[in-house]
Image 1 (cartoon, rainbow, N blue to C red):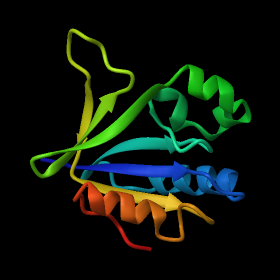
Image 2 (image 1 turned 90 degrees about the vertical axis):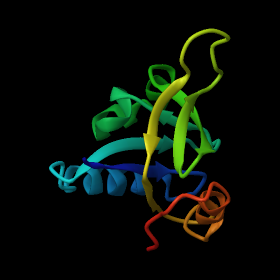
Image 3 (image 1 turned 120 degrees about the horizontal axis):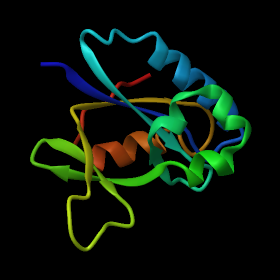
Image 4 (image 1 turned 180 degrees about the vertical axis):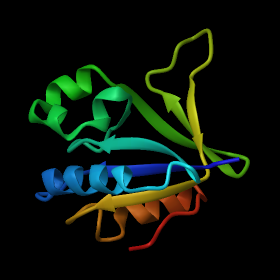
Length: 131
C-alpha cells in the first residue's frame, strides 16, 4: 500500500510563485511507486485547493482560473489521518476528497517557512517533513 503524501506549496508570502515552482518540481521527482501524491495549492489568502489545475505550473499564469477550477478543501484530523474535506461542504453526500498519511510542505518565506504552517500541521497531529 502506498503512502499518501500531501505536498503543500504556495502560501501567503512574497515567495509565493517560487514555492509553486519548487512544489511542483518536488512532486514531479517523487517516486510514484512508493507514494500516492496529492498536490495542495495554498493561495495567498491561505486557502487550500486540490485538483487537476494545481498539478501544472503553466496553469499558474492565471491563478484566478486555477482557483475557480479547483476544489477548495480544509484539513481535519480523523483518527490518525488527516482528511481533505470539500469546503464549503454539501449537506448531503460525501465531502471527503482524500486522506493523507504525511504532509510535505514545500514553501518559502514569511507566514509559511517561518514555522507557521508547521505549527498548523502540529495541531492536526499529522506527520510532516521538516525542512
